[in-house]
Length: 497
Image (cartoon, rainbow, N blue to C red; front, top):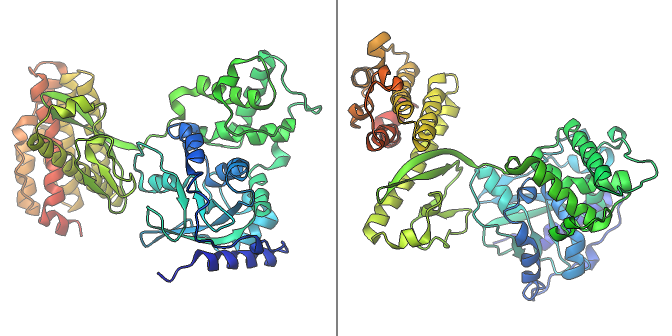
């Protein structure tokens, strides 16, 4: 394909020379045999235990690869080196930074040019045979696309042939260069010393004092909560002279030792006990009730960017590659394989296609909200829908019914507002049938959704209008049907040009 990683790697070595660093290129040579064939499982088994850990997910590629380089050198390749650059994913350049930053980062540190927790660069590991190990790219791309990963894919092997269609462009190589960037993440002049004698805590009470000081320091440095647990090692090194395993056995936190790996394990447990679910990263932007065999489930809507192929497979373990293709049935929260096995192929196909249609329609509506953010009614309509859904699953049926009416009312009014058309106020302003007719007359947008199902009077919120689960589900689904109609409507596409 014309691209050769070896050539780009050699140019990255030339950039070392421009910084006055010695060449290391002679240690690296492409080979036709893979170093990783027999050893990939070693790394995967070691790392996969952290796959769903928010500690792992909240950290930058620079920090993680720097912390884990020692493990790679000891178990895979002693010559493995850290590599800084950018990537091209499906004809889109990601993490591409100005060339001048290479020298500026090295001379002045990350703090001079970047928000250190949102670095616009990518770091991976290159082996001596020019294979690569990238432990964070699939997750990084999922963050850019704001997709949910149900398993954690690591990238191993030749950069010329990888499963997620990504081209790597090294710009600068060498552990010495990356170490300097890593150490510059914290402004050492702002970090107070816990104990000038560098004494480790000797008991639980002293450990608690240490951890609170560390967390306060992170707070002052505006370190995101999800990134803090892994960053603890950096502060322990500066404050106590600590060095050790970035991911020790969690069992070590149970002993009474406050040094080495035991101390590090205790820091992870401390953050888990202190913050719990707040360490989790949420990629779901909305939830839609979906009915499957007379039971109501939550269909989670991830924000997607770019092209994603959703498919339907009754085997829930098949989730595609989680980057460009996703089994839509896995977007239905808490649905079990045994339950799926008892659904006919025909019904499963209908459920899956409905879910796909909803995901694309809600994604389109999120785009409209963002593009026309000067019209508050678009966002308010989605807020009302989310309120309807929350109340539905909490069995607050009257409140859910009223919010369903409100979200449909607000989206029609938002569309009229976009075209500078007026809409009725007072009692008529709540009448969805009259609003629907006004929309047709002013914009030529015709809605075929039966809005009678959600055309409640304000009295419903006070419990003065009888409702049941089925009718409230239908009312909630009216908004989804309207969104799907708008998403597919050619007149709407022209209207929003």
